[in-house]
Image (cartoon, rainbow, N blue to C red):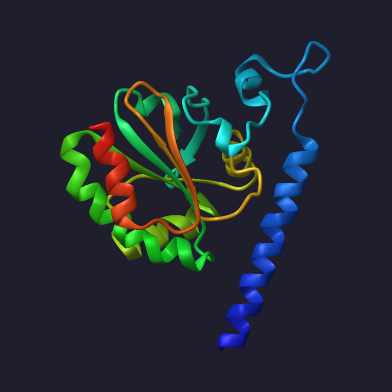
Amino acid sequence: MRKNLIVMAAVALMAASGGYFLAMVMEPAPGPSSAVPARAASEAMPVPRTENLIGLQRPDFTLSDTSGAPVSAADFDGKVWLLNFWATWCTPCVEEMPMLSRLQQDYGQRGVRIVGVALDDAEKAREFALELALEYPVLVGLTDVMLVGRRYGNSAGMLPYSVLVDASGTIRWTHLGALKREDLEKQLDSLL
């Protein structure tokens, strides 16, 4: 059983890596010669390196939540929010999610929003979020999630990856890997 789980995780990781590679290859280059629809013009911007994001305005995006409703970055303007990229097959992601749910309960009244972004199938992410009783919204997608992750500085495409945005929409902190509550609280408290 454990061997099957490891094989399934390896296959999922290879599939995600392949999708990430396709996203990198297929993303249109910005410029006058590219045929980018007006709606996607902001999505075709160059991908900044993680360390260059701090102090910049957050990129725009629109992704679907687990019920299919569109949610955009602008929906969180005026709030301090943490964008947390994860997947059901990512062990460190799954381990940090209960802490993030408790953090949402503890900091929600102070204007903080945790926003999960699942690199997964909508149904699988919805069932997983219900099973964990997450206290925050979950957005889902595959290639579109990888593209948003790149625009938010995750050029390696690794999970979990988190970005902290202040109430004015400025990126204040990024973190690759599992979060520790004390580190995240320190960052949040500096913005409230």
